[in-house]
Amino acid sequence: MTMGMRMGKARSRAAAVAVSGALLLGAGALAAPSASAAGSDGCTTNDRNHWVSVQDLGDAAIHTGPGAKYRTKGTVYFGQAFKVSCSTKNGYGHRWLYGQKENTTTKGWIQGSRTVRL
Image (cartoon, rainbow, N blue to C red):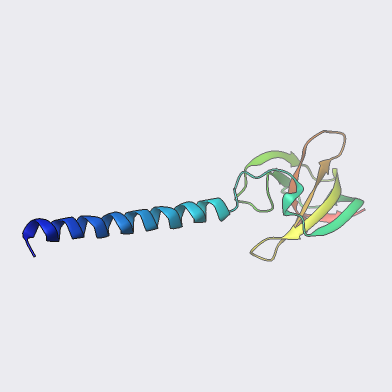
């Protein structure tokens, strides 16, 4: 086998590995959840039509998804009410509630441990 043939085979293998890697990474990117996902798509429990009040003096941040890694879009302050639509547990086992802040149009996720049911 000549040097040129060896180099051609090496390039072909490298190209095949690169294409395989790109396909695997692309498929992983399609399946990965987005940290900016908004809405109730992450709900696993239907908790419709009940209210909770924030009882944590540190308040409760409203997030775009069920976890602290998601973007913050508002705050439910101590004593304020939040109407719960549904909930889920995240990968750390924390219960997150999806709903709407009282007297506003702000919807999102708050950590359930900061609330009490009204």
